[in-house]
Length: 175
Image 1 (cartoon, rainbow, N blue to C red):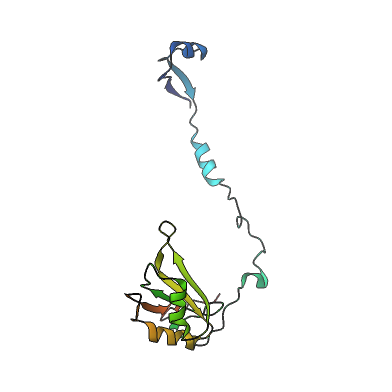
Image 2 (image 1 turned 90 degrees about the vertical axis):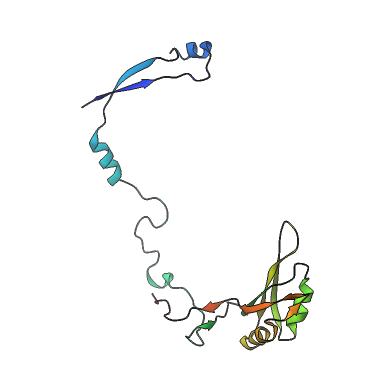
């Protein structure tokens, strides 16, 4: 059944000419009949259409296409994890005025460094205080961690650990 709703037109900040152009004087209250059908809201809620990828069931992930490659597990217990290219360690406590050569020289004696990231603060241009160092073998990375953890480089004590580690305890379920 239709209900009566009151709508008022308030002209905030309008002058008389703009109100005359709108053909309605400011401050006029009009009455209109509105039908609030209760069945419209229920139909709208149940007929919701899902958009985007995955909205409909398809065979996109059927067969082998949903399975992804994994790195070979050398042992299943907790400990360091190998990245795709090598063994990565994180060095924190790096002095803000350290150069890449300083860090490279300190860690190069434990093995061949494949990659070294020394991130800089965009605003100041100084080192953020940490570095990532990648070694080819696990033994080289372990030797660097053992030797350099707690050592002083440019008057600051370094903290050296594995960047990636396998979780202890129960492993994730395989799909």
